[in-house]
Amino acid sequence: MIRFMAIMMSEFSVEFKVLLCVLAVWRLTHLLVAEDGPFDLVFKLRAWLGDSFFGLVMDCFYCASVWLAFPFAFLVSHDVPGVLLSWLAISGAASLLEQASQGQPARIHSSPPPDPEAHP
Image 1 (cartoon, helix red, strand yellow):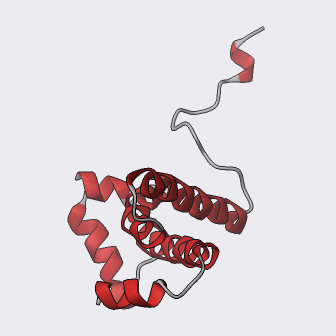
Image 2 (cartoon, helix red, strand yellow):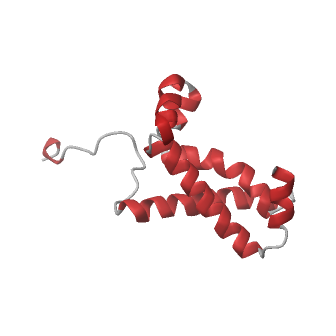
């Protein structure tokens, strides 16, 4: 199956490959992080993973997109620098799509905002 996808993808331009990869990573990441999935399968998987490494990854869109983008980077490039650059670009673009679809800025820090009344 992966070989078939690679052969099929070889016919596309690099720009179209990147676009397809970004959309696929956004869709898969959104499914794993924000949806229950068909027959609640993703919900059950998330509950089964609990507080494990993979369970925590499924709680954060940005974390999950980094890991999901990695195999897609090999569809875009075939040398080490190209794969690394594609990996970051695909994850970054999927993150931008997520921010745009949510209509709110990304939450970078997990700590609460400072209390304005604490400082005179």
